[in-house]
Each structure stands twice: as structure tokens, then as C-alpha cells.
Image (cartoon, rainbow, N blue to C red):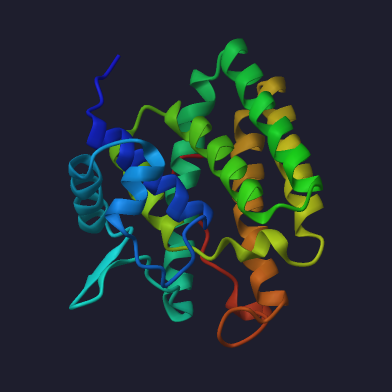
Length: 228
């Protein structure tokens, strides 16, 4: 088991909060407030924030300290394409490593996602969704790819989880994916995960959240390659 320093533990907490949207975009992160909330000294918080800045989760601006950066709609397409490719890779490598115990754990995470989503708590839903996906991706045993994907999630607008009927659909997509994993259908499960990621992107377009409005038929995201 790998040892984690206090600053690493704080960094893990802050990464999850940035990705889940606990810290709103444009929010200035105050070391003293974070330290008090987590019950640690300023030092591990300061070091953790430096780690997150180097990784791209937060940005340092002159005379304004460290901020959670705003989303850049024009950059979202590239981020999506990278997510599709790398998360397909992680899923393909994770599925052969899923044991009965792992599957039960993933189902437990999914149960939490389902219950929280029905309670209409966006922050809790995004946090539960993050934990479901990244517990799966950890099973791939590809730490460098996992780190890249975490950064991509921090830059991606998960607002789509509150758009239209996405809340119900993303629960159904998770459950369909788990059924395929349980049946041992690796290729089907990988395809289901890719479709799940793509459907969130399409939800953003349907609601005109991204620049340019709904995607035209000829403007579909590129297919992920490899890992199938």
C-alpha cells in the first residue's frame, strides 16, 4: 500500500472538490479557510495547492491568489475528444481486473449515485459520479493516464448532469454498463462507457450550453481509437 503524506491527502480532497464543483468557477481558494475546515495546518494546504496549480486544476493570477479557473467553451471539444480516447483506454484495461468484490464495490457506488441523483443535489451527485468513475479507472492500473483524465475532468463542464432528463439517463447508463461487466462482455461494456461519455456531450449541445449551439450531424466528436 502506498504511503500518502498529509499534503497528498489534502490534494486528493481538493482535486475531488474542484472536479465536483464544490468550489465554484472563479472562486479564490483561501489557505486558512481550507486548513481550518480540514483540521490541518497551513503548510500541507499550501503545498497541496502548489501541486494542484502545477497539475492545472487551479490557476495563479497576479495579485489575486489561486483561483478555480472558469470553463472555456471553445476548449471543451478538445477536452471531450481526449476524455473519450483516454477513458476508453482506462475502461478497457480496468474490466479484466474487475473481481466480484470490485463489482460489488462499483454497484455500491452506483447505488449512491442513484439515491443522491433522485434527491436533486447537484454537488453531491457530481461527487458520487466522480467516485464511481474513478474507482473503475483505478482498476486499470495505469496511473499516468489516470492523472491526465483527472485533469481533464477538472476542466470539463459537468453541468450537463442537471440538464433535461440527463439525471435519469446517466443512472440508466451506469447500470447498463455494470450489467455488461457482470456478464463478462468486455467489448460491450467499453462501448457502453464511450456512449455514456458521448451522451453527456450531446446533452450540452442540445441545450446550447457550448458555443455554436446544438451540434450538427456533420460535427460529431471523433471516435476514440484503440483499447477496444
